Image (cartoon, rainbow, N blue to C red):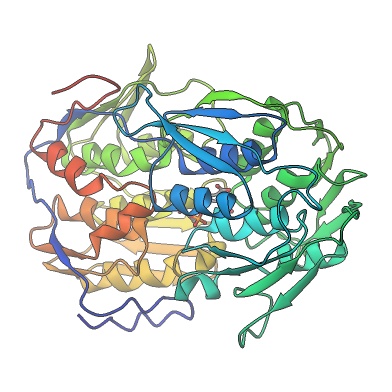
Length: 471
Ligand SMILES: O=C(O)C1=C[C@@H](OP(=O)(O)O)[C@@H](O)[C@H](O)C1
Ligand SMILES: C=C(OP(=O)(O)O)C(=O)O
């Protein structure tokens, strides 16, 4: 299978020979279902990092089990933590008990050369290098071919500003994977202090530094400043980081915009239940919207920092009805899907699912505030434009988003670019456009390995897979 020329600068070039998955087509039959999804990728990987820094063993209940969480676990084990699977009550896999990285960092964690595979996980490639910078010895970082194209500069430059030696390997023109982080000499530790970074390309640069800030001798004062005045995207994810830090006793002052003060201090051991991934619930909710059906998701948190909480405001703009009653979030699709004009700067990871719905809407849509998606798993603006147009759609890339106009759609292959959210976007469109084949649907394993089976259950009406319940 050769890969199309997406025309984008960042679109990855997946290996040839990837599978083609015939997306289930329901036509005019509304999808009606109730289901829960596995644990949040963003929460799972934050809790894993904090557990590795904790002052005692920690337990994660109902964590995500996917490629991104496995890569994080392997990275933390490489740094000296221990992770054990123990029976839990989640239908999606066991709980985890984590024994933290041994202290003192400058000796106990072994000063040998370590190697971390980041895969295509933004949380691993951004959150783990600052952790490795605390430890004696050196740690090499690399990942999938496209991981080398994802922005890393602000994290590398922040570490260098803290006095950490980061040795750029390979022929990377700017600070990107692969590189090697060299920890402090024996008896030394990182002082911390005030740092200024430009996090306009990813909120993960802020989260990465905040997660370890309490481990610096003087803590960390982090200020975001962008020359063009750009803000930090996906701010709910930074709020998620601050909330998890406070949960484990770390003092964080975020009272001033774009400024965070993390006090030095311990990370208290914890036992936490991981919320389900509300962003990954998105494609299933979108199925209700595009087919005029109804999908319910029990155990929906009333208060959460997850970006997927924004489905409550987003989906009604397509004409859907939403309600949250007794923890059950229900979406009822409209007879006709209308287009939207949305600023998605708070939750860019929802954009592929939103774009899929826009593709089948009866009026034009504009999506804004998502220029930084060019640095996600692929250049999502280029990839979405290319793949929507391959189906006969009328998508146009703008400086910071997409314009998608109604069009007559036809069967075609929808390439995923090794991006889980591209694959699920193709599946959503495939519900109402007959003959869509999604290339490399297996890439959904990044955050939802069960997706193909769950999607089949969804359209067959048999998915009532909730915690401990069966069909
Ligand atoms: O911190 C996190 O867990 C994430 C932050 C966001 O990154 P960006 O700010 O780069 O969009 C989000 O899109 C990504 O899926 C997960
Ligand atoms: C951008 C995403 O992930 P990450 O940056 O964590 O790889 C995503 O899950 O949409």
